[in-house]
Length: 249
Image 1 (cartoon, helix red, strand yellow):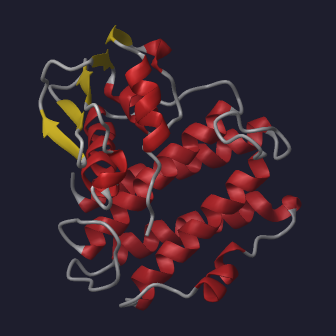
Image 2 (image 1 turned 90 degrees about the vertical axis):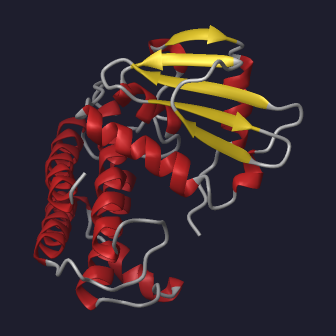
């Protein structure tokens, strides 16, 4: 995917997140984030948007210190919260859209360029949290297959490859993910030493088949296997979920 495609997806999903938050109400619980209300979700994403935009606009070569990050999450009371969110979201899309393709700044996952990284990461950050906001209304989003597949690649080949030994298993376990709406599959092998991710379908102890959006939500723990075709041992997925936590740093 191209940078402008990520930015456009970020724009749409941010608007839909705000719309869902408004429909649900800021006091509504977020089923996919136990313990959170919609207000917590909006404050989190609004702060992340400001934090990301600052790296791009300031062309920072290193991350902010934790004490310096707090300013980005200093949200107003609920009466002004959605306007605050929309302002930060808009500023991020403008910053990414106007950035020089040769932008040089800090990143924390592999990408073709720093600009591609920030556009991709913020598009997926916002997409998954849009799903959280819509869960508070009883709805579930659907994305273009190419975007959801890109998000699966990011979590499997970027996030989980930062410390693949955390996904080791003895005896080894394997999971195949097969999309029905795009010609793309992934096979996850939890070997004794680490996680291996193979492009394409291979017979596995557990085979999961469904739309790529459902597989995307599944890997982010925003959906279960009940909406997928399951072939094999479902306990393997519980073993995966017990190990597959995101490592941000």
